[in-house]
Length: 329
Image 1: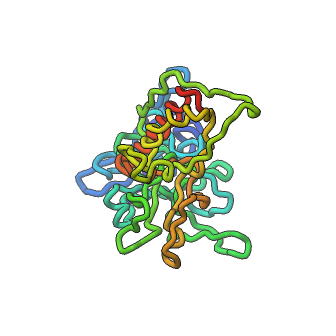
Image 2 (image 1 turned 180 degrees about the vertical axis):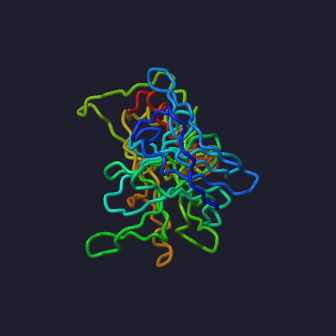
Image 3 (image 1 turned 60 degrees about the vertical axis):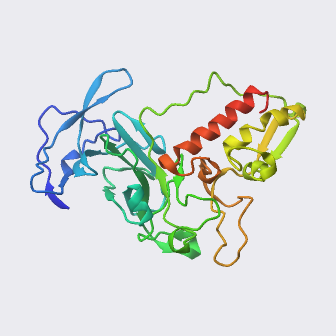
């Protein structure tokens, strides 16, 4: 990548500090990959909550990932990756990091454990308190995945394990992409391949069909504790998708007939069932070793990690919606 100083912004361009722009935008840089690409410092239009448009300052402009992406200061909230205003805002908390960068992957590069594009974050522009943030404006992030690289003190005796050679998963990611099949190691029998978070789409919706929480009183609950994979994995379940969220949906009527009105799910968020595979042939079947609380377990989904794990999100929502339809909390 070649870096050149950004040209001066034209007079009259307004920016909101710590929003989709920055008053310190004069420190920005423009990146390009080919001599034919001639990046021009620009202001982009961002829609405000009141519906009006406001010009915001571009911090960087990149010609990568098949097209141009504008890199702006971003916002410290909400945490995680959030699609809005024609792009995606990334925000992550780290109390001790001295430097940070956003790492982007294509699915193929993730398998090869190669970073497709890395966006270094400026602590003066991209940090508010202990939250690092950046906004990527453009539509080039579709089917991309992301993680973070942090630098800082490595002092295990104080609980600090900063290592710039590692790329870590956002704890607020809504889906995590890693190995595709349950109990099957990655390439080279790797049980801990590089993981990355799903980048949300701007118009991703789910039809809840008017669903609302049932709000039963605790004293009235008849609880069925369920291991979501084990519930339908055996051949005797006669389900089309055994061991998955959709497979469990097909058995909800049976639970209703038993008088069950509440399901207590054992861990169904992202965890690594091959956590101890290098030292033991046994799998971590129960899942009490969390990787991401906000990411439904992709390997409990009939679609696996296809579509960057979005199928797991929608299948889990379907399970919740269909349980509520049957009066099961």
